[in-house]
Amino acid sequence: GDSVTQMEGPVTLSEEAFLTINCTYTATGYPSLFWYVQYPGEGLQLLLKATKADDKGSNKGFEATYRKETTSFHLEKGSVQVSDSAVYFCALSDKRGADGLTFGKGTHLIIQP
Amino acid sequence: GAGVSQSPSNKVTEKGKDVELRCDPISGHTALYWYRQRLGQGLEFLIYFQGNSAPDKSGLPSDRFSAERTGESVSTLTIQRTQQEDSAVYLCASSFVQGSTDTQYFGPGTRLTVL
View (tube, rainbow over the protein chains, first blue to last red):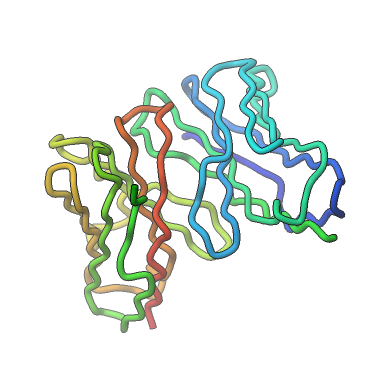
């Protein structure tokens, strides 16, 4: 079945550092890929998405590129802020399937001033 | 406009009791999803509803779990004879149409604790 693997946390960085959170996936079809973010005390929010190979999703300074050849969708940001501290979830939706999202376990990101 | 709402926000129950969790989707959203998030784990897809179609129940973890939805409005997730392993955050999401590219909007969740 489908699966998503993302780097374990917590990831601790200093403000203005470069961020990469790795995400790889396994899917039988041609999935759409998502990054969701959960800020402290809040619900899950869509951060960005990409629906086909080589698409780049971007939002709030974050970017991720759909790499079919490496089955990856790594999240990057050039200069993180304290307000980026949150839990980040990589997810996929298989177009063949039941349309529920398959999530990774989440990566807790801590940004120190 | 209001987002997805869920109630109760927290529920503590004794092993063996039944619980009912409620989800109010965003108005006009035809698709509704339930997920479970156990401590330290990712979200586990449980079930979805699309309009008046029969739901896909294959993701429900056991026959103690059931869910209903009236038309395109409120949904309830019922867990009968709760067990300690049912302790988790139960999340509901809705989207405008069912489909892999449609954004799912999540509610704040119900934290269930089974003693």
